[in-house]
Length: 479
Image (cartoon, rainbow, N blue to C red):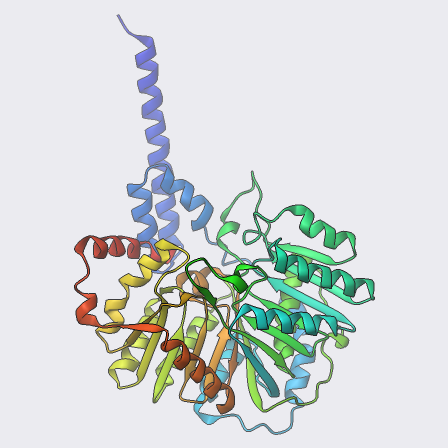
């Protein structure tokens, strides 16, 4: 006699297996036809094959590509660039450094990033001085304030900035704010609603909500930009949150941020207004947002952005070229080191050619899995002669790089797949000796709070630890 309950259960199980198998095979076919990086494709195939159900869920949330979408039409983009382009061509004859001419041309060609001279650059290496300077400049605003942050926390720092913005909008200053929806997921809605109620224009970037919870969660706006009256700008690694001042119980939060005064602020303004168009569908091109600016200093600067939408990986390509062009040294700080093949090859090649390549990482990171992945790459660079240092004083979140006393860059970009492939990022590239020497001194000072990693000792780590790091490395394109 047939047990219909068992029979029905078996039929349902077979149907589920067939549907799941079809979904996995279909997803793998889509992955292959998408012509992505083979390493990333293989990582997703492994996840789909060895993590039943969970693999499909992960792919649905984090794996689907939206690179074919356009942020803005070419005609509208050209309108937005009209004013900064005019300012660029109106510059007096500028003595562009020949050693970095190809790098600057790369950014012009791929990113429409204009190099501007006559800038003053101030560097902040802790949250207190950066916050004081930002509040000071916000208080002086007369016409407009534009803020864009990955994290805008509802804590003492976030409320301090919010209250300042409310005071300024009551004075008649235009205030616009962009925050990342995922970066601020746990921030109460009332925090931003209070700003909206006061007349501040607030928008979230790529809002992610159930049931429309899609791969948007994988493409985040990691930029930290502030523009005041089109003449003063801030860019770097610090968000608006209290932990950037106080750090952790186990150490300080070491970061790097810039204040720029001068025509290079046009680049930050362009980046903000492009993102504003993306979130608000309003194209702002009025000339008063790009005021004529007198020289403030002697720094030649270029603001470069990257995103997961366009055909090029601008910042990654630029960093690979900068490392390859280094003659004497290239120093870099990053909280996460999950390099793409081009960055890894550039570092190895430069070190093997006799360039003093130094990499500084935190000894203890805020995310264990990314730290394990970072550690798995150290043998690759150590064996090529790259000098590796672990920062012991606290968490190193700085994204500072300097080369040959002539080139330096600070921004939001980490040396990892996420920054290069998935995030909206921004970096300032400076081509002058004064700024480069300042950055170099900061790096050397931080190095005093580091322990150096040597290949012989690094290879003696327990086999279990190395195995875990190697497994995490397989997933590094997805982290």
